[in-house]
Amino acid sequence: MGKRNRSNVLLVEILIAVLFFMLSATVLVRVFVMARNMTTRASVETQALAEAQNVADTLYAAEDPDAALEKMEFRLYHGAWSKADGDFTLYVESEEIPADAGTLWKGVVRVFYHNRNVEQVRPEDEELFALPCTRYREGEAQA
Image (cartoon, rainbow, N blue to C red; front, side, top):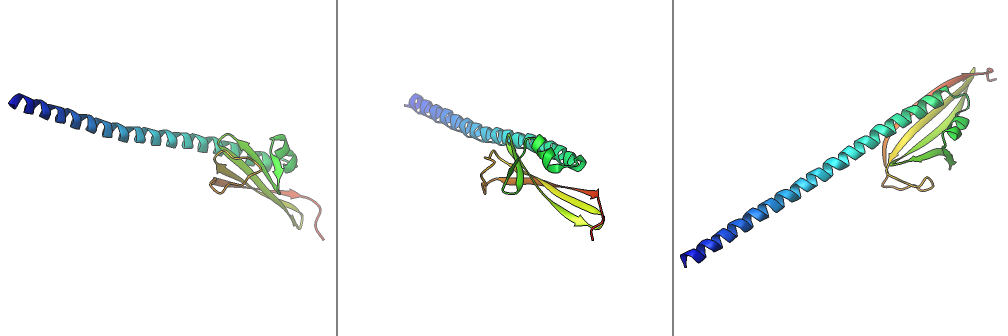
């Protein structure tokens, strides 16, 4: 009876060790998945920031911002220009403000995280950041 009791104890020890390794593996898999998600998001944020800066610089230098946005393949939808690019979407909103000796063009480049259809507004999309861009164009004095 002593041998049988020892073998039962050995089986229980092996089961406890297997359970411990299964729990450890579960925790490690979660950690690796979370790390991968964080890496993917950081990559998307870096790419989105570079693209948004490029758009803002192009708009600052452009004589006609609408033509520049069309050339960059943005689409005008409900008064805002938008472009879906992989895991993020760029939105450009702008306005022209008449001044005494010219026109002030003000724009904002907004970046939203997640794939989305350009025509749809999804509340779960998260705004990553917004880059303002402003340009003053001289012209005739306003009366």
